[in-house]
Structures are given as structure tokens and as C-alpha cells.
Length: 136
View 1 (cartoon, helix red, strand yellow):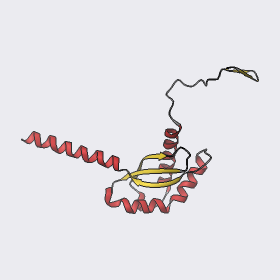
View 2 (cartoon, rainbow, N blue to C red):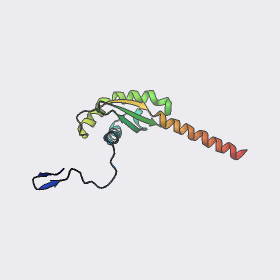
View 3 (cartoon, one colour):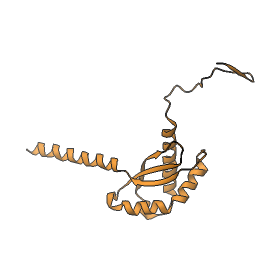
View 4 (cartoon, rainbow, N blue to C red):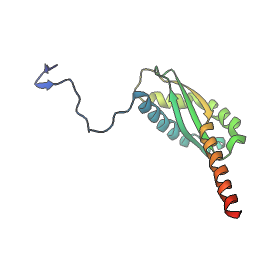
């Protein structure tokens, strides 16, 4: 399929850098993660000092985004961190609206990253097992 637009001949394919193409949801998630992480640095709240945004799941319509975090406080600090993030949600969503070109700004839902913590626990168990085998 060819179309002549002005003096440019369009062949129906975009020429890119030849790199991989990623799904829109993955690109949206990464962009949101970067914007939220930058905004957390700007927020002056002691409860958020050692919080890391580890991932984001965005639904296909950009209505809702689950924001996963981890912190040095571990599970003991989760409730306080969620409370702090919720108190700053409007500011974070406003920052997203200003920086991300999208029809909608998703409503943010904050959750601790249990998958990351499970992986750390498994790592600890394996490390302990190797240490015991070395002593035996």
C-alpha cells in the first residue's frame, strides 16, 4: 500500500532504529515510574526518604495504575509509607498529567512489592543453606 503525501512516498511502514518494539503498556509503565520517582525526590516527607518505586502495572485504558514500592523500613514501614503516598497522590498525579502526553491520568494505587521481598527471602534461605553445608 502506497500513498503519496506531498512529496513524501509512504510505504506503510515506519523506519525505526531497528531496535525492539515494546508494548505500549510497558512504555507507559516505565514513563510513569520515572515521573513518580522524580516527584518523590521533590516531596519533603521523611516517611518517603528511602522509598524506591520498583514497578508499575497500568491497565490498558490508563484508568488505574498499581504502583509497587520497596523501602529500607521493610514490611514494618509499609502502612506508614502507603499513608504518606496517599497523602501526596494528588500532587503525584498532577505531575504525571503535566509531564506525560496521554488522554487520561491514571488513578494511583500504592502497594508494597511483595514479589521483590519474596525473592530476597529465597535468596536468604539459599545463602543460609550454603553456609550450613559449608560448616557440615
